[in-house]
Image 1: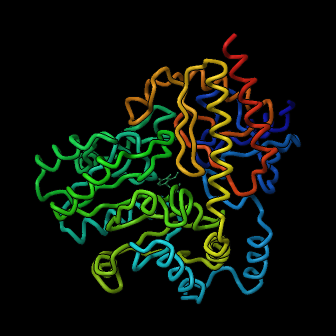
Image 2: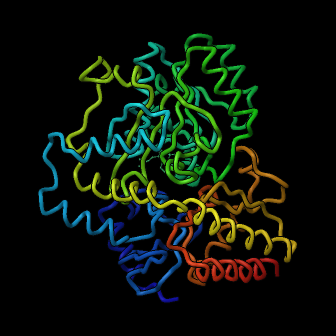
Image 3: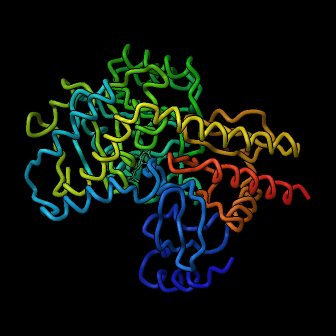
Length: 431
Ligand code: PMP
């Protein structure tokens, strides 16, 4: 594989962009080598500037559930651009978007659009604090909720990959308002409630994690967290930036059968353009300005281009009857193939999958259920596997602590090719 142009492009990029990338997860720091520069993408494939084509499981870190450059999304963007790209005044599309979100996710009765997942979680937390008039928040080790100060405590994703789960620059005061518990360990949550009675504004979690790799909550854990929140007057925030419209039409809350008080959204909701949203009970959302005192605003919020791409995507997801069944079949085929490889080669590893999100953990343990299990993974082995996969035309996230995403555009042939490539990579690693 020749990546000469990407190598040169990266040398140029580092001159005036910190680390050469506009988001740290794009760097190949933990796997070695330079990031690929992408020139185009269509369906399940992306092509780098050296003209190498890859089957893509990064999917822009989740949004591209329809595959890249879906013709309906591109057409909607063309049509919208002709009428102007930003007005800073209400448009009909924003109401249509809000209606559709509330229909697809029934716990959301009222929703505010923002521009990224980070903005969504920061704003949801401010609202929870304003509403409850309390300061503390509980988050979970290895969960990532964007780069808001309150969340960069024992954070997952790039913060974890690059070894900065507690970022410098977050003041001691902010850090002390964030309490951390262990995922899938209800006692760790209950003991915080015991200690900080009536001071906890919110519990925020990824209702299926992606940012320490895919981990599903146990029923006991998630039901227990819901109950503890209700009993203590604490708001439960499901951060569904990644899982929303991904693991099911109604997100992880549909899969788990739990109704959070607030939900944050991003990624898919923008159809590949920069969008986030947060919503929940109307009574809580009415505390936001201009109705209430909790302030949150945005020059480009509800931007027409972003609404056009997002709305087109959501409408397709909502109106295609067997969309999620088809997606489940594809993801199931892939994970069964990968599992079969591990068994055939007697290669130690665990595959966690929920819907079309999956992670292959390089671990000798039998299961991966929380952050300490994740930390037992062999990241050097992962790095070797990543490079072998890339060389055989499979593009995955350059970190063990991430999810892979199957899109509706992945064909059986793509998935089989991925399974075969994985078999060959594992075989080489065994020798
Ligand atoms: N929450 C979760 C669960 C996420 O996965 C992410 C991004 N990976 C965010 C929040 C932050 O979203 P953004 O990168 O759009 O700011």
